[in-house]
Image 1 (tube, rainbow, N blue to C red):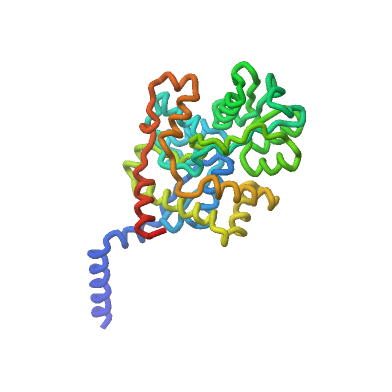
Image 2: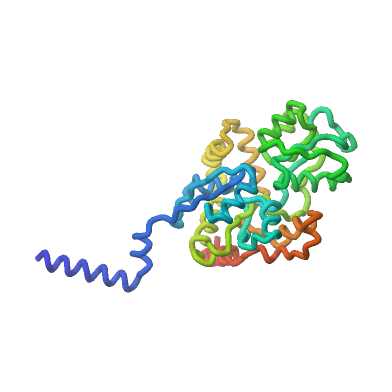
Length: 332
């Protein structure tokens, strides 16, 4: 009797393995673990909510988020294969790519438009008063540095001559420096826009109202990882997109605010709601990135502009195209 039961069981296993060979293999492998560096920023909160909502786990990924403040350190981690995919701003990674790190590839972005405002402290109330003042950024060469220089040019200033740009740190550190009078201005994303309104600090320019493509928080990986594990890369994009849907869905509002509280280490509900509201509007669909967002960085950088670069060469849009096709098939 026992031999008969074992025989039937082995026959069933063999039948399943013939029809669905990937099923048993997937069960044996377990989840694919990925270390994912990220900077602290409003658009990157989409990634955090995707992680906390379990969106990546649905696709067999076990994500370990790693906060890295500096873009250069994050890019170095990727090139050293200490990480295989990360969330990253445009300027640092594009500069590294332009200087020879051709492995770097953008496959998407949770923020594809400038989401910053230039805020000044009480000592600067008008645009002309900004000349010669100290402008705080996270670090020289980072995305906030690019954005600050871009904002100054939009206001008619030469960022190399008409202001002193200094590295201060993350958004919280820059806000403290602004409030304490150590700098006169800086660029901020939500929820600091809410704090500016509360304190009556002037917003000299709102860059989010401009039609300017920029990879504020791009999904950056390396070409060798794409070649070796294309389905892992695809699953990351699927999980991210599902997490973005979760973020924007009103029925998840309470959970999203709780996750954002963890992300920012804050219980200021009003500020967290400001972030959720702003980014639900700023990035309404898939994690799209465009060649224009790369070209805009190149053309606005005095070094890169003369290097005859083509932004499309840094992109691999096949995963976004697959994602769009899958969702169309599901009528989502």
